[in-house]
Length: 422
Image (cartoon, rainbow, N blue to C red):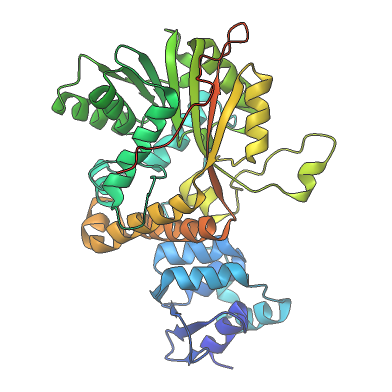
């Protein structure tokens, strides 16, 4: 049996992917949507010493594996028919490699290895630095001019990424009821997109906080370049250290995934304390579908992006996804009244595909700014995430809540939380 045939057995007969190996062998169906290229023996060595997605992910990041063709179609096929190699094929690969290849290779330098108490301030700062302190110019390539790293809002697929991101910021502004003179706290402000929009379009006095030094540096520059320093302040600050309330509104867009299940009540309790009576919180977060074991009478901890997953090791160390019902319950248990919930799942698929197109369109520049391994990490994780959102395996919700005061929410009887039509 050739090497390509061995790897094709790992993928399974239902996956329409051709395999081309470094020894010149090929295998796979004639109607393949993509080709998996095994560049060198290290690819198989990584797989047999860490079977599953982590080993394959390491091989791809290191350049031991390549993917040619329609990456989205290939990942869709793999998600629909996850490889489940039996012991026989693994043993055959081991025999093919020989005993000298059974020792684990050092992981690629892009892999995270955090230490210390999970979700402590120090460890959270290291996790954020791993993901965000890559290169502002690298993120400029991926995200485009808006530098907005969260799900956009697409009235239609052809409006373009920049317009869709502006739509998202405006939708958040509408839900928060922003008006001139209000104080807004944006938790996890990134490179300043939301606070810039709120100040420029709604006359809000905004504070944006992040624990990424590179984000804070560029966000401050963007505020100065926009002439908004009198309205916008960017702080290098953990949300747990904010003590200058009250605020009229709080937005948290794409930050909640870093909070952690054990910190949910501290998080929502802190934001509640920072709001004035009738103040509003908009929590925009990626989540997961409900699982059967969520029915258990005792609370089952939400699974994080686990340590041995590709995303858990390379992309979001310590990240955790929660089912939206858990989020709503936690908000209300901590004193908020939830008033509106909206799913944007399909919108994130469109957003991620646009980011992948940006990255692939300026691949050489992106590699030069970060590293080839880092660019590979981002390509694979964004494409796989797009497929996950499109299939419903990942979700994203905006949850609007208020700090009700004596039964008064401050909301209209029939509030409309929609973007104005063209």
